[in-house]
Image (cartoon, rainbow, N blue to C red; front, side):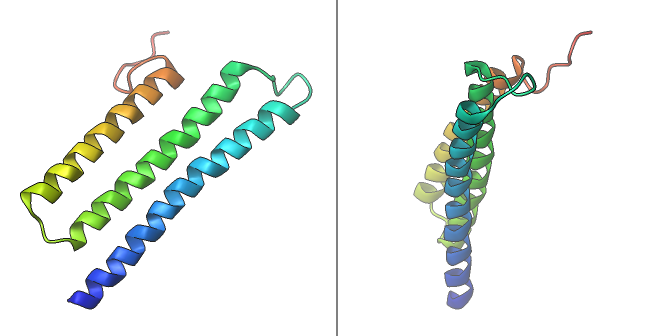
Length: 114
């Protein structure tokens, strides 16, 4: 059983690194599009940069939440570890929701009015 916990912990670390790499690569991509785009199809403006950055941060946060859940599974569940996980997930969910509202201009559950 201990061997499985070690492997799950390694997997959680890898997923966490993928989440951080997603955010980092998204930042690099967003700024490269912002600085090196030419022509009418790719506008070089601040709003487009913010949307690209927000999408990469949002995706990275989702991956990091998954890594936190996996890391918590391998530890012995105590009130402290579960409450820390709940707080982390709550903070990241609020951040994800606020980024979604910022990017789309509406809450995810709102319908688009024609």
